[in-house]
Image 1 (cartoon, rainbow, N blue to C red):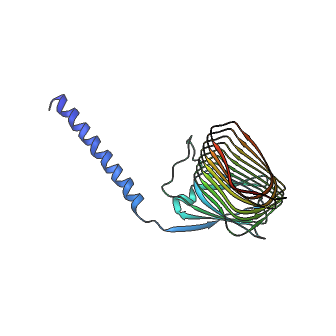
Image 2: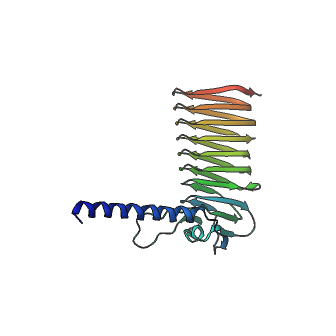
Image 3: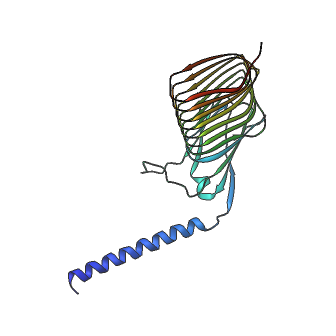
Length: 256
């Protein structure tokens, strides 16, 4: 056999091995693996930071609880650690690996705590709060491409900062002061009740929808190409527009 024939034979064998390998990978991904749920040991926390794609479901409760549900590989690939009063959800790093392995499925993480004051979501996936949340201050930061959703909130001070391409939605919040900032390409939707001071800042390309019910003073700052849509009832509105976007107040009413 000449060298050319040997070379073609080796190339054909390599192609077959690649195909077999790919076939095994897709087969393992297509197969339905059993779902397991593992409860994690935790101590007190009021802040949550998410660094790896997953779906987090939070409920305010008198007790502390964290469980991870998914395929065994997905559950084993997620670590829950503490940094002071912060619960950090991150991938498990194996020895010799510079980057974590990409999991073929996303895990659900169920979390409960007496208080929630800070949410930092850095990745894809979702963070949802089921049921009402009553706290003094709440800061929500989204730097990834995930979705963050809150139902009903009661707090004194609210801060929402979106710097990624995801979405933040708050169905209802009652408080005193609020700061909502959009620096990315995502969308923010919030409905506020009885706020004394509200500050909205848009410097990205996304959209911000804000509804006000019996609120006092609202300040808007637009320096991006996105759009602000304001609705409801306020006593005063201050606008500072330097971008190419728009501030729509057609559905905003003023009370005295």
